[in-house]
Image (cartoon, rainbow, N blue to C red; front, side, top):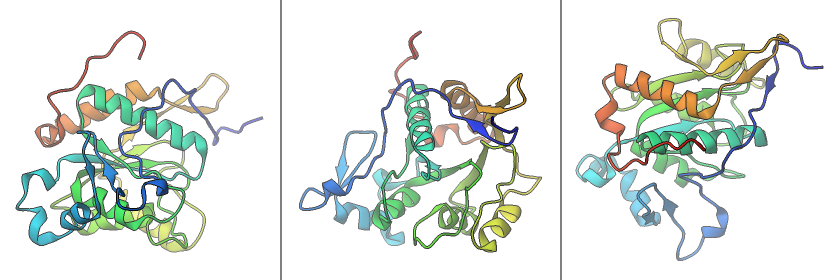
Amino acid sequence: METSSEIEPWAEIGNVPLFEVNKALQGLREGVRCDDGRVRGLDDIALMCSPETSSMDPVLARRYVMLSARFDKQDNVEYVKMLSKQLTRIGIRNIFVNTAGDFGVATDACLAQARILLALCTSTYGEKTTGTYETYMELKYAREHPGHVRLVPVKLHPKYPPEPPGPEEGRNQNQVAFSPSLIYINGINETSSGTYCKVHPRQLAIDIARHIHDLGLWSDVYESTASKFSNDD
């Protein structure tokens, strides 16, 4: 039986990732697909990551919400994909990296375009692992560039700030980054049995949109060509 600290995964309703990098794309056609349908190759990505050019080209400007999450469980992967789909339908441009291993170029590309870092705080978020590119480093980047990237946490586990396993650097950074003065978006509900479950991705997307509007960042990440919700979503 689950304890009150465990999360029941929300059932899958769809699977449409906006930004998924697969190692099969490597080669001459290697690149990153964004929500505008463009596939950007390594040369474009390198340009995005260059501070000399990223501020000059409007195409490379910071206009996305980056979904920063641990993909250590399949439930987390599916939830992020569904949340991405719902955010897109509202009109929020968003990107995330979904790879099996280190893929630093893709992570750098996401961070270079991110106006908001949406930290999806599961129990292991911010863990300092052996990998070079991880949520620990994404959070560190946001802390070091507050004028460029706005940190917005989403609580997806009863324990907040997260206390991930591994080296203490991860727990220490979480305690500092997710201070009491930083307002988080609640993404869990308590059930009648005393357990917790993640809220429906559609509802969470709406709450995120309201929060972004309240922060005064709506125009930075809004895509006017968004589709409307249907009763089936």
